[in-house]
Image 1 (cartoon, rainbow, N blue to C red):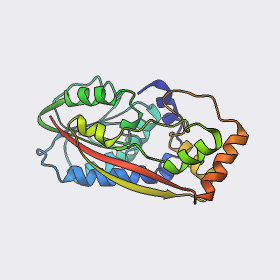
Image 2: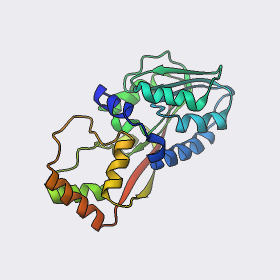
Image 3: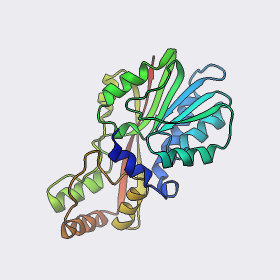
Length: 245
């Protein structure tokens, strides 16, 4: 995950108010992790903790452990620390989740809505698996291929190009890496295209991994009109995956 992405998420000042999809995915992932067989007081690494949506849900569900919550954006890490509050069993660290430089032997490595920003997902998953102790689990939720299809179609019709957003991984690619994957579709309704784009900016997801020139205003207005004509709904394809060490 590069510094461009870190900056985008560090600027997401109103993240929680706009993060409806992220909150939903964090709850669902926490439920899935709660069904796993984990040791008492597990050693847990979270990649891309953000403001602590998954962190809070998991700590409430699992309880005492040896928790290391990490993010690439300092502002997000600070907000997560505020949400969780002072706990002797929780540590925080500024870490690039794609290339984590941390001590290994974790019982659980988890991540919600960070994997879609990785430039090399297969390599990242391999590095994370290497940090698991025997019998450990890697559990994640990520936006998957086909997400935001409504905006993609409207943008292509107006500009002839795909919108400058993430290149989301296909579930089949994650399965090929050894993950057990389940998919879900979540529709986020908006009052209009302006509200949709404002929501993307609020969660820091309006910038692609690689910077691109801005779309000319007339073309953007055409894309927004086409998006609204189809109901201003944005469908997120969410993939939930688990891997064993």
